[in-house]
Image 1 (spheres, rainbow, N blue to C red):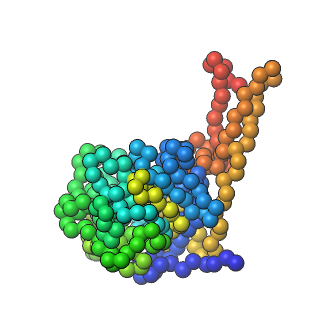
Image 2: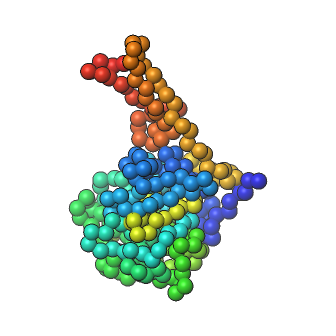
Image 3: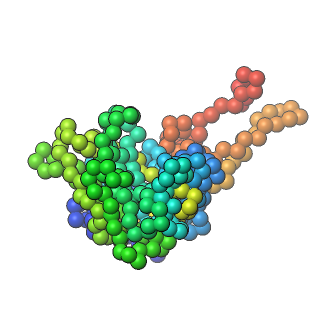
Length: 306
């Protein structure tokens, strides 16, 4: 029986009642492996619709899956239900990653990286860092906390907090107006944790978050395999998102990615067989048409076949 989702309390409190993304997760659909390959990205789709991230894989940026060109602007409440194994391996020189849930703009201009959580303290399961990084360019950054820089950022959880159990982690972003500061807050299991960050409407630190859209990203290190059960994005009516408003629609089970279909070319004694799974191309990277059919050619010795 289908269940209609109600907005989480932090979203409803600010009028974010439109579900613009999720909650179901489809690897190669609304969630993309960072390398384009599930195996080399260290991710897999489970029978219950969740996605497991084994962590590491030479990716210390903690980006094993992301929403690609599906990005969100104009304010949002982004919530993930997930778990990860073991006490955090944390940050150290040479670490291959740590549990992280974050968002950033893919713009090369001024933008804000939003670290919803980073469990960076080795052996400590009830504390994470929550911060904003204001990138004026690809090399110039101002930090609002995150790892101890600037404002305090530690988000402390109950002493018996067990990250191996399912918990909800939610990031609230409310844009600034000409008369009211914008702000960002973090919630765990519906309760605010960590600081509230503020910014002014135009030109001040962190204000560029309101000028861009966020790509949502999840990753971890090899010490802390992670399972993500669902991700939801809630926004206000008319928000500047690049998602499809699902407003009021019932929860849908995950769509299984079909097996690749064979394409055979050649009429001689030899043939070339290609297997292309087009779902991964569907309107995410500019290499497919409106129907999601992958656009590609095959050439041998410079001569196009088919």
